Image (cartoon, rainbow, N blue to C red; front, side, top):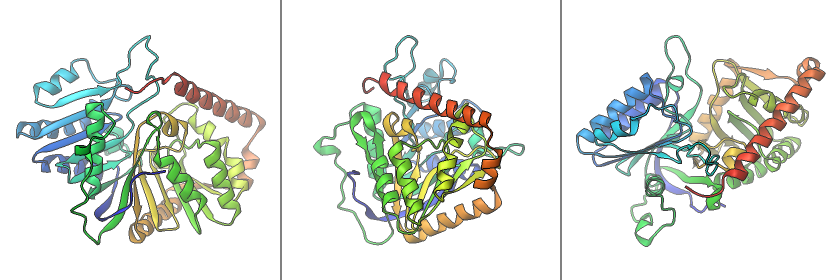
Length: 382
C-alpha cells in the first residue's frame, strides 16, 4: 500500500506533450535560484535535448546546483564525452545503472521516472522524455503524453526521492523526513506514489488495483504499452461485467516491435466483457494515466505492464480532486471522439483471421517471456 497520505494545499495543472511541455520545463529550469533536480529515462542529443541543455547550462552558470541523471539504457545513444561536457559547464551529471557488455546485473532495472524540481517548491513530472519526438515539429505531430506541474507539499516528497536516487541511499534518516508544518487548507489533495519492486515499493500498482476494483461508475485508462498483469486484467474484466463504464485508449501504432500485436491479443476478452477500446490515430501514444469515477486521477511514468510493476523505478502523482479529474476525463472523452478509432467486437471478429490470432499469440508470449527474463536477471539494486 502507498505509504504517503493525500495532503491538501496544491496547485496542479495538466501539461500536454509538445511545445506546451517543453516551454513549461524550460521556464521551470529558468526559475530555479538554488537547486535543480532533473531525472529522465530518455535524453536525446537532438534539437530538443540541446535546447533543454542550454537552459541547464545557464542555470548552472548563475550558481544553481544542477543535479542531472539519465538512465543508462534509455539514454545509451548519448555521445561519448557527454558526461565530461556536462561537468565542464558545472552540471553534476551521471548515468543511472550504465549498461556494460557481459554484465547482466541490472540489465532490467531502469530509472523510468521523469521529474524536474526547482528549489524544492515547484515540480514537473509525468511520462514525457526529452527528445524531438515528444516535442514534435511542423512536419511531425508530437507523441501524445501528459505531465503535471505542481506547487505545494508534494515537491518536498519529490525532492527527497531525487536525492535518494542521486546519493544512491534509499533509507531515510531523521533529517530526511519531510516537514508538514507548513501545510495549508485549500488547494488540491494529492500524493506521490512510487514503484520500485526491488526495494519492496509497489505503491502505484497497489493503488491502481484498489481504485479499479472499487470503482463505482467509470474507469478511463490511457496507456502506451498495455500488457497488464493477470490480476489487474481480471480486475478490469470484472469491473466491466459489473456494469462500470470501462474505456481504454491505446495507440494504433507502436514504436516497439511486437507490442501492438501482443496488446491486440487481449482485445477479444476485453470487448466481450463490455470494455470499450479506442485506438489513437494521430501519432504514437505514450501516455500513462487513469481517471476513476471523475474524482481520482493518476498521471506519471507507470505503464500497465510487467516492466513497470516489477522492474523499473516509477513515479505517479495521484490527484483526489473532482474538478481536475472531471476536466481530464472530459478531455479524454473528446480525444476518443475526434482522434481515435473505436474497436468494435463484430468488426474485430470478422477481420481476425487464424494467421492474425497466431501472430498475436506469439507476440504476446514473446513479450511476456522477455519481460520475465529481465526480471530474473535483475539481481540487485544499483
